[in-house]
Image (tube, rainbow, N blue to C red; front, top):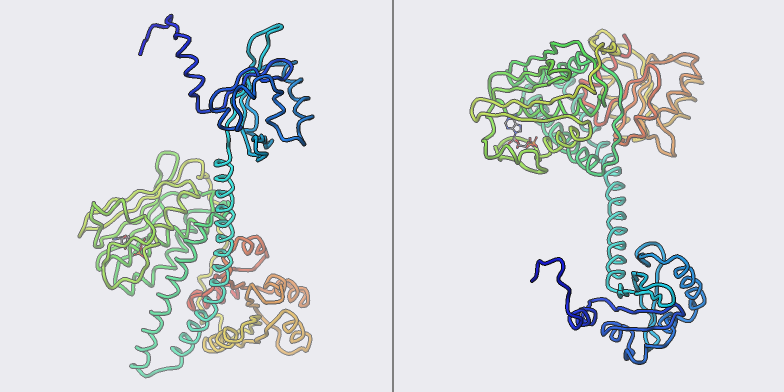
Length: 508
Ligand code: ADP
């Protein structure tokens, strides 16, 4: 091969090159007559070069678009420049000698000048490519259809599975309050563990699928780190204590955050939950400190640790190191990874087998605000203090309604159980005891929601009755609907302790 830029190719070589080109090459004169056709053009169109030369180029174009082509040709000659045809929106078609049409892409280049003006056309048969594109489009449409089906399945699963789980939890809690026999209490405690584990698994599966479906839009709000940590302290304090672990929660900075509180909380819940799960003795610490202009949150435990060789795998879906005796499906850290990506947070892990693990979440300065917004008051009041309240319950599922009623009675309240907004309204209209609180399910059937029920009951009573909205609906729609004053949202299946403390908080 020569590297001399001045070297010219012998003419015979140039002719060979044109003849062996992978595209059909045609040269057309200013009158639209074919002046040259290479071997590929012969093969593609089914004519001898000698038959093509001298004939109008329109011979190779289906009859119905010939007139149009003459106009295009005239326009091109008026303003000749190299350009692609058919690569974009317009579908170009050519016709073979046997009358069969086929899709083509054409590249046009002007040749010569003045009286000896020509147009060179490189023509490529794109039948296979078009076919491929069609197959790909069909595959994509099929994948989208499957995705929609999956989302629908998840929505159904989330509702239909959460309802019986909720019933089981409430019945178990009501029974625990009634039974005094030690052996029976032990059995109920074991049953509760199993129900809690099932709830946890269901939640992880639904969370990861939801995050996978990428239909989560972070809902950005401003809140204080301390309030968030307080909520986690309340959530995990008793669990850590039950495992005789020291549990500390420290936010040394009084800063605020601007991000999705629910998702960040979910991320931290997974890390703290794991830390407690994988620590037999010692401590679990959740802390937050300044890190430049950003923040660093750490979850540190003195647990079994993670071998260095596994550290890069633990964030994968369904990956577990395989310690026996732990419930889990290996999705907790996959959820952490996805939420971190969604909220623009950094995640790092350091671990020493036998000594413990530290997960670090770095929060960039853009998400940090100087002054923490005051948290909406949480509910430290004890359930006992608020006992004896009249609670209007709106729940369309008979089993959940019955179990909730039993549980509310078991913790000392007087429930008024109704199945719909209309029933709640007519019970109120009939007089009797006025409720101190309304608890409503979100999906009430017939297209009605708990928000509708709360709004209309409040209107009927002429006051902002405190409300709790329960929902197994994990969609963002719920979050959008729930900007009601004095209304807390609890996600189903609601933990019974959480429910009784939310009731107490709403009544205080
Ligand atoms: P799992 O449901 O098994 O807890 P995760 O995705 O949350 O799934 O975690 C993946 C694996 O990483 C776990 O199976 C466990 O072996 C390991 N792991 C996670 N957190 C810790 C921790 N704090 N200490 C020790 N091992 C951990």
